[in-house]
Length: 321
Image 1: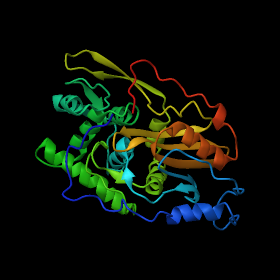
Image 2: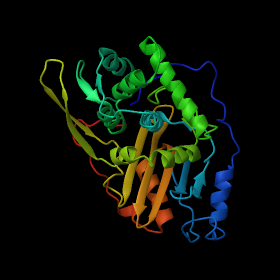
Image 3: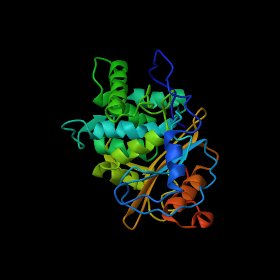
């Protein structure tokens, strides 16, 4: 589970109550009725019956063009849990002059944060020195709130940890504004607060994030094994498993991030490529997020493989998010 909010906004996030039939939902409905010409879409998608999904909010888009292929309350803002870490990683990777091999010492405060809030963790050990690249793996694979804290503390500005993490959250919101994600807002560095977005805007964020080679490499990794200098002068060995069980379960999946909290329910941002076609989707507050994602991908690819899908089992003691 992700953590509760470290910092808090003074006002509730606007945009949660939007039209029942969103513009994107209407667009998806129109897409099922009329073919698009080559001038509006890179690929041709034949009309298909829209799948029934358990998620309260969902979207599927063409990864190349962003064109909507399916929408269910796609423009309604909801809690997004640890899918917020997509933005955290993007901010780090897009920091001017970022050094991915810079070593960051693990503070006890990062571990205490996990303990206090019952967060998912990469089990970073106090005094170890991990690179920024390793912290990105630790943030995106096991959804480590301790790793997200380390990144926020490193890339935020200010004299104290509280000031630096607040600064980092401000950077997340600034990036959302830059990307014109008008219904997306963050008040934590790890998705444990009242961080909200819409299915459509999360898909737009995912399309943006997946343009970065490092991000794309990380989120398609099922398991990462690495080592770091330990506080006692020895070597620490880390193994992190990707909480996204769609990887290795549905043919073509290339990422990207899970998220779960009580307010958000089970969430998933996902992407898959078959041939020259890439699809990106989001399901928010779903009782069966992987089945939902597989149904949506089948809808986009014109296949019927979802029913036979068997989820990849996570190794014992893996984080669940």
